[in-house]
Length: 190
Image (cartoon, rainbow, N blue to C red; front, side, top):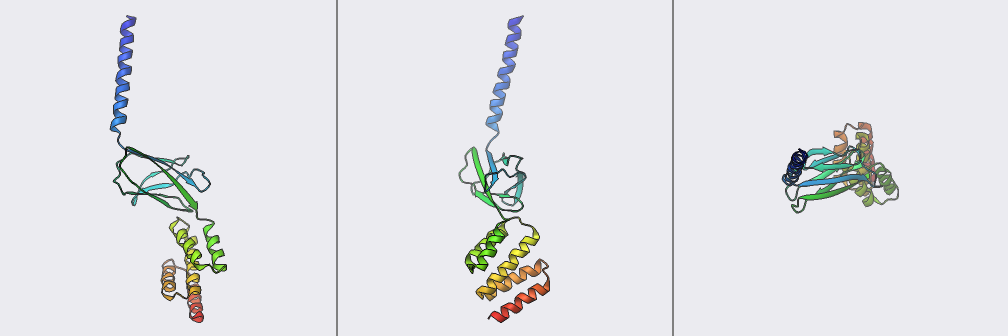
């Protein structure tokens, strides 16, 4: 009787073992990754996008997992509010890939851009503003960055770029007196 129980338990264990091996084999490609800030701290709740579709959210440890086949050249993007988004383009078609996203905080970027304007390093300011605008920042921060960008173009005497930014400011319902003052300043600087 003891031998029969042993054989039954052994058979059940073997069936379970082989079925788990087979399911792991069938599971297909897997992409795992971690999203962290510039200090290496995990970013909980960051959105992971495949091209323009949000496919998952990072857990409390900044970890995410994608269980689907991705064509080579697909773009995976990580976004979180108050951070500059990061992208990764998939290369190769291996069964398992690991991605590490390191997102830069957008909070200090505006101060850096403002400092660059004060130091009259306008190219650096424009570069920082461009990086800032790619982040998921609050609407008022976005408008402030547009305003600062218009000031830079004002100082560089780049009329076309200045008026393009003014149009963007109008789209974001910025106070018209503020815009009018910028346009008047631009006219005086010419």
